[in-house]
Length: 237
Image 1 (tube, rainbow, N blue to C red):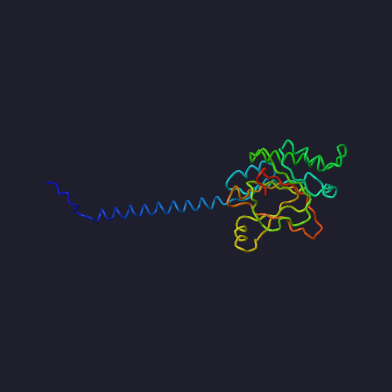
Image 2 (image 1 turned 180 degrees about the horizontal axis):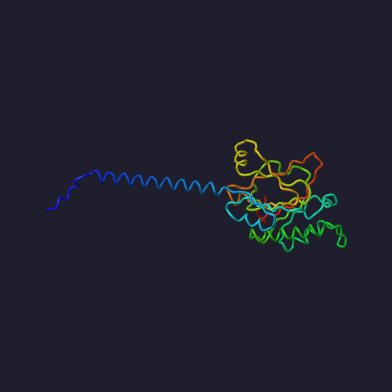
């Protein structure tokens, strides 16, 4: 007759310990890997010397895409513009007529810088529309002499395009400094877009880690900025 009693409980206890150890190892490994994935998805800044870099904003690990370039508009535009601000909702197709009406002296008298500015604004609107998928755009073209947004902040939009045609560019900080600033400390390093650079900023409607930026402090210095801002229509506040 076969003895069905467990003759030696030690192997069973050893097996139980091994199983428990393996489960603990698996759980710890998954937790560590999950933490690593979270760390790796903290948004970064992507920089390039062509418009193609702007498409990086669509990836989860990029919250600011910067197209490094020279301004297509010379400093004369800033001194000759006789309006403070243009705000309108338009499509990339209708943007041309809106901007042309705002900056032209008359139907037959356009300053030399008008054509490159209009063409560039139209091209940027096309890029913005293609990347974000929005057909209608909220446009702002302005001459700025103040610190209009002097505190570091993230915008309440999904995506915002900013370029400064003339004057100091927008300032921004990276994610570690954004965390320091949120805790009440000053950032260690403040970065600035160069004149002509195009920045595509991811906002709070698209991520918990928006690109944190501000207007450069120019109030009282006599400096001016010629600024173009594009937002998806209906999002900008």
